[in-house]
Length: 514
Image (cartoon, rainbow, N blue to C red):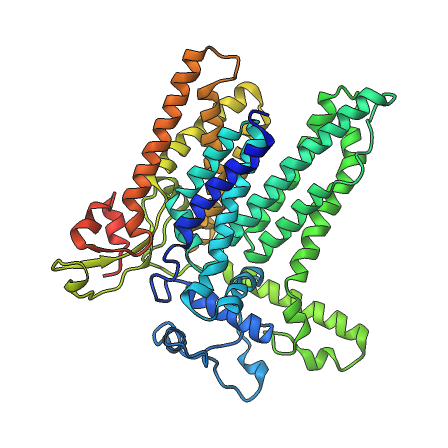
């Protein structure tokens, strides 16, 4: 490991503070309910108030509840003869909304309150990425570079300042990956210790308790409890963990690594990456199980025939609810002006306009026309460089079978490629910000290639200096590109000419509401 243990924490923490300042300054701007916040902030408030989601006043054409909240009035609930009649059918599991609700509970039903949790989670993800990149590269400098680049991504910044679910999905996926990397190191250390001190056997040893892998399973269950798309990462990480175990047994020279892996490692993997995620997912529905007013709950029927029937009927009702949610997503194909196809996402062709109010008075910017935008788009210099880095990782993995390249490519594939199926098979409505769980791994790809460019410590000084200069120049370009875009990411008031100057493509302009 290059660098001291002190700098191994101090460096990433400094980068995290930098990213946190960007995410918390003016967090309550714009003072509006932006894009899909209209769904999640009210569901979150309902969860912390009633334990389940309830129907609120108004609809998308007449957002009475949104106007009341912005005026400081929390009387937003629809009145029903029976409380169960006001149960709201929701499209996503509850954990992300519980997390949003924690901020609302702490700071009230204000823009700052409902965005607080997203800003915290977005900031913490910078620290996690910096630490996991350091562990994977054995370089504190490269770990800090990873955190710095993630802090400068426009899409990550916007979602860290908005009460949507996707930033929470990204966080739990990244946390699970970090836990698995730590588990990989711990498992290989145990194998090395066994090899040095114990009689050899054809299958190798049992590796004993693996708390990091269990923690990864809990994080993956939490990812699924934010959005169902977390299951793609659950499958990928389960495969990755087993392949790492197999590779470790082969590397230490065990004669029957396959039998050893499937007899000694896979049962523990099933518990950690199967049972633990399932238990975590079900636990996040505690509010639904504990109250009578959840959608499809059937409380009276469940309580009519004793405790055993209560448990069985509750489970049946809950499973039926999950089936309805999955059916809802399958048929979600309505046109939306900000929708885009997954093959366009790495090119940032169609961003999402989170906020663009019409009719701003000229006095606010000193020009005839003013703009105040929140544009959900990645930092182009970062995304395009990361795309090239991913192509480089493909070549690197084919040539060397480096585990780091393989892991990053697998996670990117798990987070991106399934959406191609939904595009072709279901013509599903999709948006650029579905890519956010992949963004930390795009940054990891770029950092791994940066490590190759700089070279090992044993490389000639001139070669390392040239590589470091190239990496530093790229980081500077990303910083400048982010600084240029920053006003249209955080709703700063600009003249329309200044807003136009920041639109990289005509499709960015078309993404703004007319």
